[in-house]
Structures are given as structure tokens and as C-alpha cells.
Image 1 (tube, helix red, strand yellow):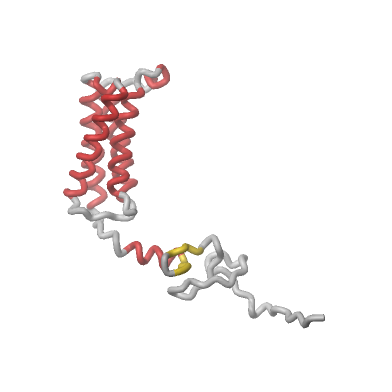
Image 2 (cartoon, one colour):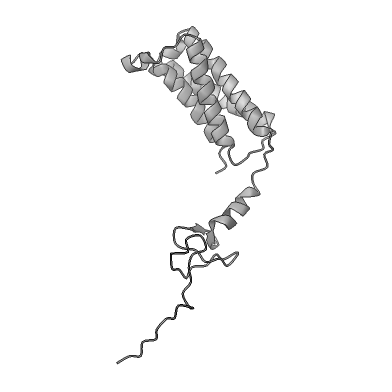
Length: 176
């Protein structure tokens, strides 16, 4: 019969974030104990979310005013584009909306990036995408777009236009 050693309560370790979870995994940077849910696999081993966030913060150089500038350019730009598109009836065709959204989304994203000197903050993609969506819907409604047209199928082009612009500005500001 083999000798089984008992683990005492003092030898057990618990996650620093979830104290009810037993673990033996440690962050290879700070040494904090972490459970499998808190561990982030990196190229140099497992790290806790706090250490990964500290490394990511070095890449975010945006200032407090950058969010306002990004929101203003993306929101106003998308609003004007959608206002003109709906007023001229171009935005009601899906194919035209797709290509206009593709071009104008790239132009707006590049204008906003140049205005903030290519700085990014952690929430720049959300600000850019949210402002574009709000500006696009407001611009379309000011031009006379009725959202009930979507239910009848004739307003899908407007959604495609707004969606393409939102997608492109969001992706342009993403870090990864």
C-alpha cells in the first residue's frame, strides 16, 4: 500500500480575483495566483488580466479630447452622408449604398485618424462606431427617412449605408 500524504489547508492556494476557486496557476509577471478563467495565454506564458492590460496601455496614446474629436467627425460626417443619400434617393438602392458606404466609411475613418494624429484610446472604436450610427440615423431621419420602410423592404439600403460606415470606422480604430 502506498503512502498518501494529505494536503493541509495552508498549502492550498486560491485565485486572487475569485477567492472561492482553488488554483496553482500563477502569473509569470507578478506572481499572483489566478484561476483558468482569469488566465490569459500570451506568447511568454500565462498572465493575469491586470498585467496584460498594463502592457496594452502602452499602445493607447489617446488624450481626453480625442474621443470628442473622433465622435464629432464620425457622427457629423455620417449624418451628412446619410442626409444627402436619403434626400437624393441614392441610399434606397442596396448596391449603391454598399459602395458609397465603403468609400465614405474609409474617408471618414481616415479624416478622424488624421485629426487625432493617429492616436488611439481604449474606447476609440466604440466612440467612432457609436457616433457614426447615431449620426447616420439622425441624418437619414432629418432627410425624411421613415424607419417603417425597413419593414416593407424598401429602406434596407439606408441600413446598409449606415452599417458599412459604422463597420469601417469601428475597424479602423481597433487596436488589434
